[in-house]
Image (tube, rainbow, N blue to C red; front, side, top):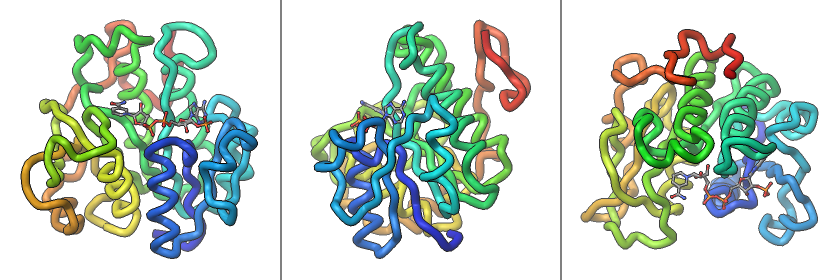
Length: 247
Ligand SMILES: NC(=O)c1ccc[n+]([C@@H]2O[C@H](COP(=O)([O-])OP(=O)(O)OC[C@H]3O[C@@H](n4cnc5c(N)ncnc54)[C@H](OP(=O)(O)O)[C@@H]3O)[C@@H](O)[C@H]2O)c1
């Protein structure tokens, strides 16, 4: 990773807070953004800079992303098909705004989700959540800079599904994953070269808890080698999302 702080967008959220705490434990300088500094102050350690930013407002992103070595995007979208909080504005346009504001060498870590390549999944009825998430992923893959795309399965706060972590590719599985493990993956990806240029799903399974992230990441294939569907917007394959204006 480049020298410089890591900015966590959504760093006052449930995964975000865990990411912030792990970065601090590792001595990594960290910044957090939130849409409401007053509300979020108690969720973020006092010595961590907390700035107002909204991924839907490009101007708000410039100060907290200036000079950062990496950015983690952990944003919960709205689920309506219309309105200011819809997945299109947060998970697609929001990702684009972040990419416009970070330096070309900054490592971008996106918290996405499983099912994004399964357009017929019921979750896609909520504001075409899956389509827009996949389109946002695609912007990151097309950018040319370092990235890691983490696709958690159903999030839990405990490891009821098992202590071990399985990373998969191809988006065919189903299961649950603890937020602590998602946070670990995001933080470890920043210091593990094998995680760069990869997209993977995450599941808890039976077995010993995950400690050897180098080995987990080393088993992944770089994205160019993984087959997957292209983003589809209104039933049409999107050939170049970077230049695409959906509607
Ligand atoms: N629930 C599941 O089973 C599941 C499964 C797979 C993936 N995921 C995804 O995992 C991610 C994180 O989950 P979580 O449990 O940590 O969610 P969370 O606790 O709700 O945190 C989400 C964060 O998103 C931020 N946010 C929302 N809209 C924003 C905007 N317009 N601009 C900037 N920040 C915005 C919020 O920050 P402020 O309010 O401070 O601005 C909040 O801290 C989400 O993307 C979620 O969809 C969830």
